[in-house]
Image (cartoon, rainbow, N blue to C red; front, side, top):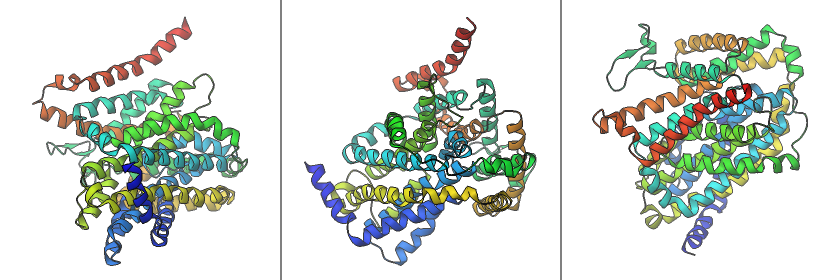
Length: 494
């Protein structure tokens, strides 16, 4: 009853006309930011922070606006991922696997609609879980050691063979290539240069935006130019609408993805990219006999989209409950609280209930606003692909270059994007999947950071990686994920 009473007080804060307006503005800005590659919610929130202070917004109102931008951007990024095969952030990569094939089949509107519905379900159920389990879950998450994170990320990497849409060896090879790209730059632990080829520009490593836009957007355009732009564009469109039967068909997948996404999101540093990868591969494994994953299975859009938004909400749990940011964006939100002289942690819910509970209540409201805002616009977004190819694809190319330059202000990165675009074109022609490259790139950095921490804490003793029951269980799952494809091949031959 105490929780319901506190939540009621939160709704009293969130449902004021001014805060509803801020939540709506945040959803609109977040969607627009998500569509633009290279900017991302982190940069948008960082830019909005000074305005919040300059306008002297109360802390609860500022946080409502900034978090609405955060989860609003999650849906915006899917528009380009589905329609143009151009993911703007790591967690949108899995959506391209089935989202873009659906768009090519004339069902871009249906893919966008299930993306919005899945995002709403994942985010709303996660907010419910956050309402009642924030503090206990955060304490469990903090108990995860770096060694446990190493095992978790290794498990996620072991699933790369299931997301490539081709043979497992090709997918794992692509994932290893992504990990190699993640190692480019100066080693943060030793200061040693790695794979820089003597280039000063590569000392800082390769930016995700450069890699993703190069492989997907520029590579896609090169492939279309090689074939026939008109023939390819004619296949793509808004087409048939999403049916209630399809929503019901995807509901079990969305429920499973919500659980996976929220739990992974609560773990500081795990991130939405891990959640979307695990949820997609879980659905693919569960429905191997009755699915067309990688060819336009609508569950292949619903699962990663639901998990991504659930993870975004989960990321807020350790930030609010323990003052530990779960991602880069929540680290900026944490900074916003500190700028208002508010200390996150267990006492936040007692000392500043209008901030903690007002934020939680606003997420119930904001997710409804986001759904109401984007579902009616699905047809408008899908009609983007009815633009003549001679106009659309040069526009996409210009947007891609603008996104790359906005992310780093570096002309060298523009050249790198072109190099990765050519590689993406060659990989497509040789049936080498691109998604494992991106996942290997993102997870490889996380694996290295946590491996270094784990070995530092243990004095270099590798046995520490398999000491806890959690890490042992995850290593067993990793071994099973690696051996399972071999077992299936042997069974088919037998």
